[in-house]
Every structure is written in structure tokens, then in C-alpha cells.
Length: 252
Ligand code: BV8
Ligand code: ZN
Image (cartoon, rainbow, N blue to C red; front, side):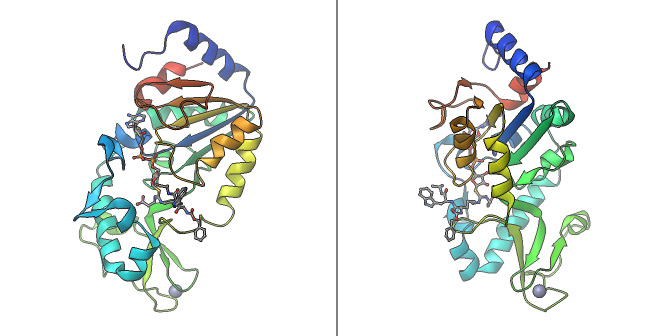
């Protein structure tokens, strides 16, 4: 049955989890798919927004050209997200938080669902859709209360400190990751015994450097994805299944 881990592998993975001291997990959009969050590259092509491919609307160039359009795109996604809940994949990973000497969850996702499921100290490589930051100074603002009140406030929001326009606090294509976040994730990936790669098409860098670092420093690497990816042939075991079905089987 798809998603069922065959018994011999299941007992091996449970044994590895019991013995592991340091565990590193990298997730992508697929871990939120069973919560109803659309993935980017599912169905063989990229998501399209008003005729614009998502990696164009979510890019530094678009932000520079048309900030209001970028706000519209992220407001649309926040509207989708505010009804959605974590799924069993998020909840299983939250249960792993305190089961090892060292556990690090790193995500490419911006939906905040890992924290909503109870995961702590999540490294959000690509930022968080629920926050805005100033285009000019260090001011940041949560958009959480906005979504509760229905229609968003002015767009783009104006910084209360310096009066400049604010932008989504998200890393767009062509932008650098937040200071120190990748470095922290790379340190954790380099020292882990087990590395799980869950629900990612394994295409985006530098995020995909992390499992490569883990594998290069001797970690046992496990991919969980219904489809094969460029990482499937480079990891120790590729489990073809949905994260919300596979991860709960790994209770140990
Ligand atoms: C940077 C926020 C440097 C925005 C995102 C050529 C070669 C190599 C690299 C590049 C290149 N050209 C450009 C680059 C760099 C680029 C990049 O990697 N491009 C790739 C696509 C080729 N990277 C960047 O631009 C990064 N910055 O490099 O800066 C720099 C240097 C100098 C000066 C300036 C900059 C920044 C990357 C971050 C971009 N922002 N997100 C937004 O969300 O709108 S990335 C975006 O893709 C999302 O964050 C997403 O998380 C990420 C990766 O996608 P996935 O998470 O993998 O999602 P996807 O839909 O692709 O796949 C879902 C998977 O889940 C599938 O495999 C599916 O089978 C599986 N699945 C489905 N259902 C389930 C499931 N799995 C489990 N269970 C299920 N139920
Ligand atoms: Zn400002």
C-alpha cells in the first residue's frame, strides 16, 4: 500500500531513531500539502498567479518593479492559509522536539505551520508569510492580527519608524537568506546522525546544500516524498509516500 513502510525498513528506521543523538530535518512545501497548502511544482509545473509563474512573482525583480503586485500575491496566500491547520506530519515532527540530545527542524516553508504544531526553534530559511519588514530600516511587524480582522490594512503597509514602504518578510528568488539562519542550519546538518528530507522537490539552493552537507559528514539520510527527486538517488533511503502517512509510522 503506498505510504506503508515495509516492516524490515520500519524496524531499521525505528532502531536508528532510538539510537540517534542528533537529528536534522529539512522540510518543503510537501509537508504542508496534506493541510491543504498548494505546493509550487506539484503537477509537473510551477504555480501561476495571474499568468505570472510563481518564481517570477516571488522574485527580487518583481518586488523592485511592482511591490503592490507582490503584496496582492502574498495577501492571497495568507487568506488561503488562515483557515488551514497543521497535519499529522507537522505534529509528528513536533513530538520529536525533545526526544533527542539535539534536534533541529529547518524549513523552506513560510506558512508557520511547524510552529503552530508545537515545533520550537524552527529555522525558517525563507522567512515567514505572517511578518512584514521595512524596505528601509529594521522595523518588522506581525500581520497576524490583520488577517483576523478580514480586509488587510493599507498596501503596502507604511513603516511606523521611518515612513518607508514595508514588504513581506520572505526570501524571494534572487535574495539572500536571513543573516545567520543558513549558517546555523549548516552547523546542525554537519553534526547530525540522521537527516530527514521531507516534502521538497530538492531544487532550491542554498536549502538543498543542507542534506548534502549532512550526507557528506556521514549522516544517514532519509527522503520522504511521493515522487522521486534529484536527491532520491543520493540519500540512503527514499520512502515514496505522503509525509502525513509516513512520519506517524516512525513512532519509536
Ligand atoms: C539565492 C519564498 C543568492 C517565496 C522561496 C540555478 C541553479 C541553482 C540555483 C539557482 C539557479 N538560478 C537561480 C538560483 C538560485 C535560486 C534557486 O535555487 N533556484 C532554483 C529553483 C533553481 N535560489 C535563490 O534565489 C535563493 N537565493 O540563491 O541567493 C544570491 C547571491 C547573490 C545575490 C543575491 C542572491 C533564494 C531561494 C528562496 C526563494 N524563496 N520561497 C515564496 O514562498 O513565494 S523558494 C520556494 O521553493 C518555497 O520556499 C519552497 O519551499 C521552495 C522549494 O520548493 P519545495 O518546498 O520543494 O516545494 P515544491 O512545490 O517544489 O515541491 C513540493 C514537493 O513535495 C514535491 O517534491 C512533491 O512531490 C512533494 N509532496 C507533495 N505532496 C506531498 C509531498 N511530499 C510529502 N508529502 C506529501 N503529502
Ligand atoms: Zn522603516
